Length: 273
Image (tube, rainbow, N blue to C red; front, side, top):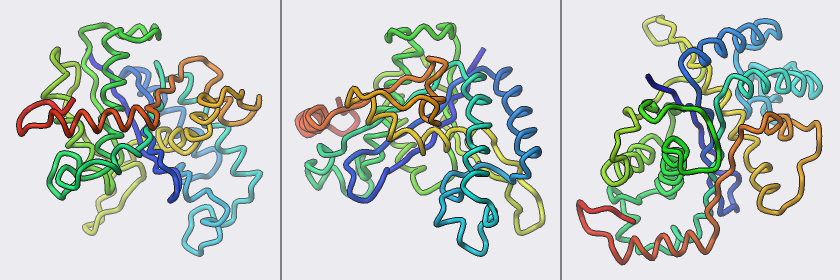
């Protein structure tokens, strides 16, 4: 038996110290049902796909944007219609928010090209993989119902951070995945893509749902850390409404402590923490 975890990353904004990895975990059967419902809703709303960046008001002004003629009301209705499809088909969702202050203090040798921590995203992906493993191994308070012998296959959207995800995954597999709960990490396309030879590569639809969660994750994370409740009825509130969305975060001090341990204990071929 196995489950699949579809996730996406968000660097929030240029001045932020927070990097977020967010995604959904579910069984193959439930993902199959999700895909049918998600595609049906895309068809109903005459949407080619869901991509939160392209639904931004400024992006919609671009001539080549697929959503150029959409107004704010139509976008809002579209996003809200998609949320329950993934929320209700997922076993659980996971948001990992990482303060990267510690990464910025790491010795340059450890951040050099080719080093284990050549990107702050390695640190963020590592936390995501570790937190997901804790949940799968029953080491969290969340009762998800996934059997202890099921393997989890992580899937990410193709993009600039693939190498960072691979590095983080290798660190975890070498050091902490003693029971082989993870299958190999893979990367897929979140949108239909036509190749140069005319072949159409179909979208991996759950990655669109991961993009939606990653886009909304920063506000959810802020709410969790500040203790302020999210306004009822907002998309962020809807994402949490079923009670199956977990939020994990590593603070600035945690980040500094983590990187200090790396500098102290890091040896080639050994675990970094």
